[in-house]
View 1 (cartoon, rainbow, N blue to C red):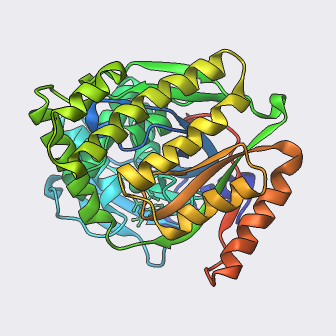
View 2: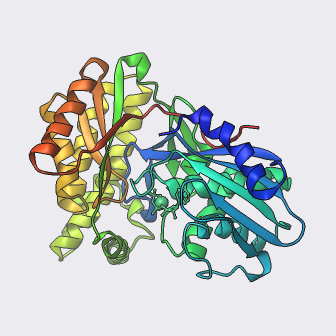
View 3: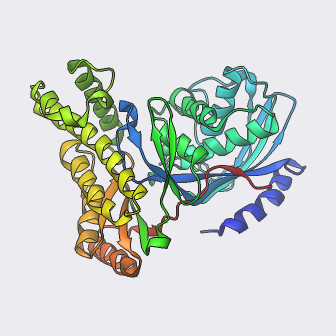
Length: 388
Ligand code: ADP
Ligand code: MG
């Protein structure tokens, strides 16, 4: 992987080669990993992501002729040229739909964007559940916001980026990824209330405590993911309707047993139980972090995994293997993170046991004949920013 500094240095000359002039600036937006709060975001619930040091970076300049030119150093192919007045949902295929969708969402909201040249390079692994797509959207949104002096707040940029992904690209994602990329701060996890977008920065300085958060990218993506996501979403909506609440977030944890007793379908009961207990776990994790006891979140992470595996049924053998082998090797806790059916897991470990846990997980994968996972340390990093 290219070093972060190297990526920025290469962006300006590459931009010049592609477009003939220099960029007006360079921006960065990170990928994210969700510490806990999974499948809660479309239930108006809580999430607790942190930004990764891995970023999408973009060199950008304005144009005044209604043209959008896009290039990524990370995919084959040349410059893609699009006309702003021809942008429409579903009309752009491939990776270009993400930045084009952001520009479309800004135009559709009435912002005066007249054109753009953009050259992108990213260190966020794609399709690993670490939100390379939101990084790409937010780096575009922030660059346009700055260059066109739009004065939009970060949560607003996140909303527009979500709209780009939902409507223009056609992916029904929640609001977490874009908000994390736009709003996270170094050394913190971001408590986000997905109902009103209320935010709180929660201290998460693991190094100071002698702890580490490992991210294990299983490098698998099982195909049932897309259909299952829609299925889980509609199950949650059905549960909320049957329980006569606007969203499952409105079922208090203390009233869970009573709510479950009102549901006949055992599958629906499990889905509802996951969402309600998961929201509660987010609050418990925050309580322990704010009390200065980060080790105590370990069992909550693992309980979250068990709930996703057994009640929400969105895990897969590789993710379960990460959690089981990490725990066997002495991890404090572990869980799948992201939508499930592949992607990544997070593992909380003592600093001096981190190597061993990483080795144990890798060995467990080899023993089962799985491709070697990618293991790295997640240091809670800054959200989107201008670099130059
Ligand atoms: P995730 O967001 O979890 O990484 P997604 O499927 O949501 O996975 O988004 C991945 C897509 O985002 C890629 O298929 C590609 O279209 C786009 N993308 C991400 N990073 C880049 C990049 N550096 N260059 C071009 N496209 C990218
Ligand atoms: Mg994505």
